[in-house]
Image (tube, rainbow, N blue to C red; front, side):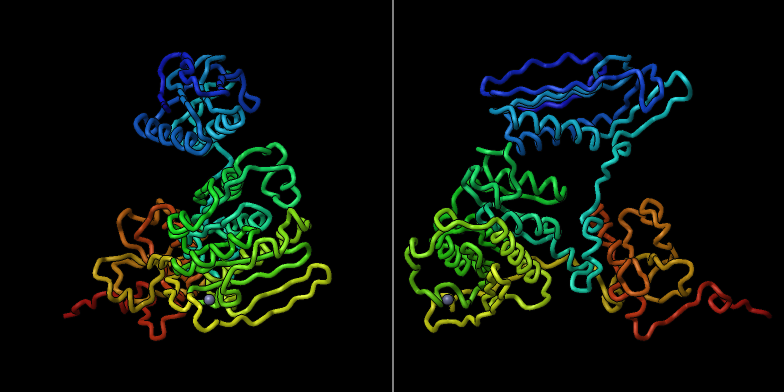
Length: 508
Ligand SMILES: [Zn+2]
């Protein structure tokens, strides 16, 4: 069970009630005599009780699921606390000590950030202050678009591309040497959901190429370790860990949950199984295969050319050596994993040329590269596959002036241009035009909840990034004018509230 409660009286640690746990970790946060050099006399905590309890329960459940806890409880004090009293108590029990330690550390940090609880410190040398525990935390929760700021400026990405990345669901089959670069780069790019399919636990021989993992992780599930690594890298990402081997039987259930499949396996049998499953489900398959110092990468689209266009029957498993038999340098899978991540980004963002009609071969001994043409085989079963449907369409938050003119509900235009940029309004049917330079923009002051708001700037870049951020912060009525004011070919410009706009007084 998991339980969170607030307590007005001294905390009595609840007894561990779980006979299946092998490790029980507890933490007590204490009131101490000084804070940042100032002498403290006593503390007060005040909470939005209902919200704090609901958030606390959700958080404990999250920790329970993420770290496979058998038991978890936490108590946070409210009211006045004397020096030495316990302000927060956390207890985590798991089958093994490591999960219990990790969960406890996670909860210490997250309780502080997420609970709506205020602390008032009473100092002996001056006035007291209320401190919101959430804002006191220095690890500010950044939005996905802030994390991806450097790539959003690329015209090939832009706010719409970033939105598409965040809606994309990509599954990587195999959490080995290829996945060691595929997964972090996809997470870094802001892919919203990453699946990991891997039945194995970590062995010492994996470490030289599987750089997501460390010595302390030996014996743990690689799928779960990879998911934990990605959460540390990118707090917004959703991960789904499948601790099972991909088979013809479970492939439809697992792969149909995702838009794109990436092959991180090193067995021929798995490669053909993935080829067949992806053709049947109409999913693109980004494949790489490596041998010692060389390898290839290719993308198999539904409809081919596919693996069976080249080999109607899968070659026998022993005909090409695996990494275990032939040996491999750690950089080889890392290099090809990067190329696979790049294929995924091209599929989602639509730039460049996906390697669907070619196979890219690279020999890392001399750096030679070759692109071989791949062709469809007449009569191959891939010919009957339905084309890929693409990543679920982005929300329609970037609008052009024609779309805006069709809006029937009243809306406000927020002009984000800075003071040193040209003046002037444009008639789009808005009820109000408000100049709010981006450098001074405060969502709380500028937005009315539920009011449709069209953000405009000179070219649509700043307004696009801000609209995306506002959407992430739960403002579903924020829109951006695509292409900005520059894109409006025949504008009706009203230059501020000059006299020509005022009603003409009847002089008689
Ligand atoms: Zn084929």
